[in-house]
Image (cartoon, rainbow, N blue to C red; front, top):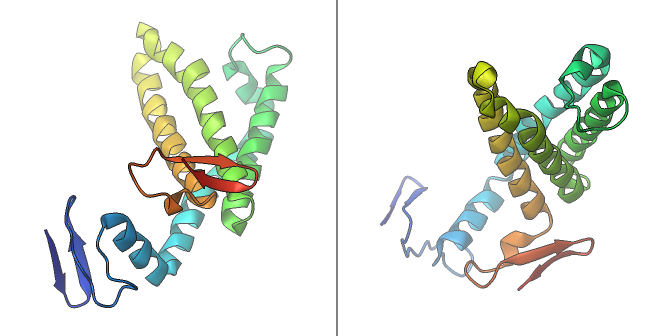
Length: 181
């Protein structure tokens, strides 16, 4: 069900509400969400900045403490561990800047999601499998999994995937934007 009181819409999954102020009415949750987010555009900017800023800090920390962090790079990566730490720092800074300045968000957030996936697969899952480091590795696994999901949401929103009606096969993101399948 949905209720309207003092201009606030409270929606529950499966509701079919019509709000007079929304363009064309608001018959499905996706349209209600898009209308509310358009009306409160400042919230989207705040969310983008709050999500992107910590990645920038993490990126700077990768440059400031590269040699110390190099010991955490798994042995499966060739070359110097410090090189991989600096490369991760570049990805973190680039992703952060793309979110902060709202430029190339699909690519920046997508790169952050890919980096988080690499961290999960190469650092956190092996850490969870090791009895001695399980308690330390589990919070990192959960944190980076959540960050990966958030980055994917920003990347998909940036490519225009909110234009696709839910349940029609989804969307495919590409250099030219989004296409509904």
